[in-house]
Length: 166
Image (spheres, rainbow, N blue to C red):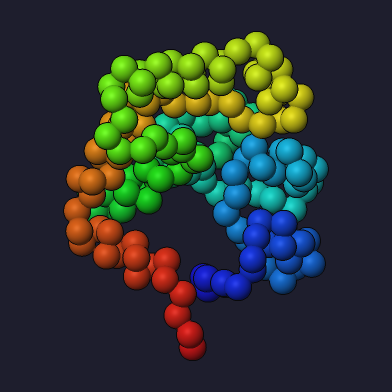
């Protein structure tokens, strides 16, 4: 596998994929279903290998394993878990450090109420967007898990994902 860099954004990567300049890519399922729903049809050009950022399989893709199902030993499991954690966060919203606890609590509650409202859910469904918001406590736990990742695992991932010139 060769890591190809230089594409400025996801749309350009998708165009390169359609032109067969690339043999594969990483992308969120919600992004593909929103922009190229035909890609995930059985006869489509995309055949997902594994899902990152999920602890369970997607009902729409029951034959596609989660990345966490794949490891064969403890080292592989540690690598997959470290690689998977940022994808669980997807697109986090963050608050400034030092925000008073009562304001933090109020903002977190308001965010979850809005994200789970019938109106927002209906709009997300209409746009084929995944709507699985994580509450602040869950996000805090994921960040804490990331901080526990062994340095040798992070070094391995850094080397794996850093493009090289040949």
